[in-house]
Image (cartoon, rainbow, N blue to C red; front, top):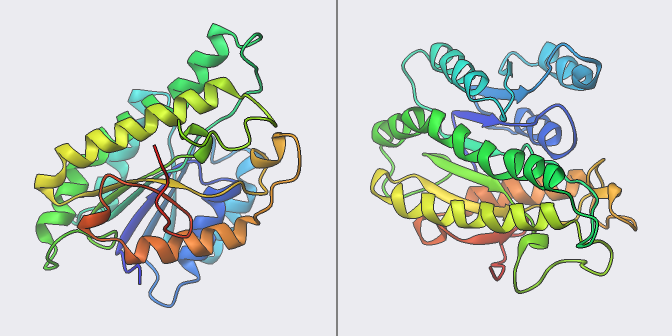
Length: 257
């Protein structure tokens, strides 16, 4: 069972990110700190998150634009201050975007924007919060690795599997696919580099989920956000060092790269 004292979720004002925060506060052993980050906490798109934070003291809304290194740095400083000397157990790099585009119509601008959010964002966020993750790992009495101790979870997609290319017939979404394949490589590199710190790193496919993003593809997404997040949190609770560096779906099944 997931039992992290502190969790940070990027892109938490809607979709999967918001549901992760909602279900984390609903757990019997809920985290002491849930840092919910989004670009514009004061804007109308963050209203649901604000309502949730008003009801739960453990939810701290932190402004962070994952595309902006200075914003990421400022958020890391804020989180460090709130943790008062404690480390960060679980970082969930959830913020991501998709833009329509097939092979013939994909533009350099769209490809760059998607790549910046989906790959470079998780990289700089992980770099900024690494000292806090290391601290959590060092201070934990637990042996081995777990998401309750210290972990980076990169929200990936089976659409980026070079073997499977989930629903290619329904949409090329080229930038998205390429970015998720790159994010998978980032995850593998992180898992190798941070093994010595006992920080678990995985790429997680949440399923094709009924969110604004999921429903933007042609056809109806088969999985509700509630079911996806419930299964993902269960999966995260079971992970150990043998899973670090793997690509899993919401139910914990291994996916091919």
